[in-house]
Amino acid sequence: MAGVRVSIDLSGVTLNGHPFNTAGPLQPYVEALGDQPETKDAGDQPAPHGHRNNQFHLFHELGIYLTEHHAKRVIESVNIALEPMECPATPSRPFSGTLSIAGVEIKRGMTETDYPSSAAIKFESQLAGSWRSVGKGLPIYLSTIGLKLPGQRRRSRARSIVLVSVCF
Image 1 (cartoon, rainbow, N blue to C red):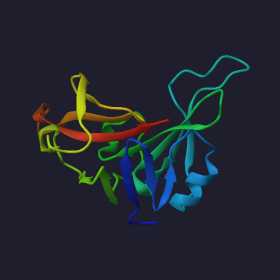
Image 2 (cartoon, helix red, strand yellow):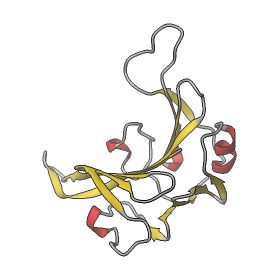
Image 3 (tube, rainbow, N blue to C red):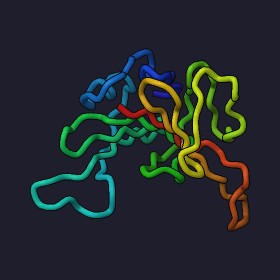
């Protein structure tokens, strides 16, 4: 399904008109996104005997992945990969649908400074390249990094938004 619509605010995330605001099972996400994900273990180390790692459910064609809690077996975050190669899980394609945070359109290549200071949802820096929403409600995270410059080993000084995550 091309053209997925994602709308995020402090009450949750809406995927193609389907609202999500609490941790829950995978199937409603599959129905909302209209695609079957590839499931992978998070992390390089296998879990000890009798346990399991968190799971990533990758919707490769959409540039979206979900994180499933290892013990509770519920989706605990929705992740929009604008630059998949810079993300913990790597969908095969970057997100190409429409993405907005409280009405502010987020596009591939948008930098930290492009996010309007007058927006309804404010973000505060946690560490360099890690931003968290301010206020009551579900946490929204922005991950930013200077993108690799073409033909060079170094990165741009301007940090682009590479990942938008909503956690339950």
